[in-house]
Image (cartoon, rainbow, N blue to C red; front, side, top):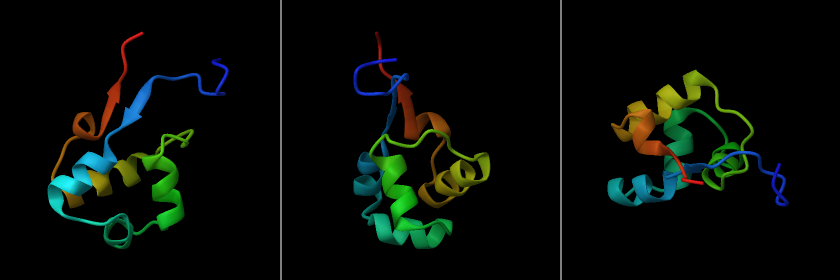
Length: 75
């Protein structure tokens, strides 16, 4: 585990996708059906897990694939 407490290199590209779609975090949260706080935790890379139904809903709203939303940083 790294000094920051994170043991992964997964980066969430939610900011970029929201910008591309001209959508706010609040609007996405409303359309997905989760709280802004929980979506913010995901957006900021602090989420420890993502439910598949949440990931599916985000991808449905943004018209993307999971690989568009998540990427793994090289070592």
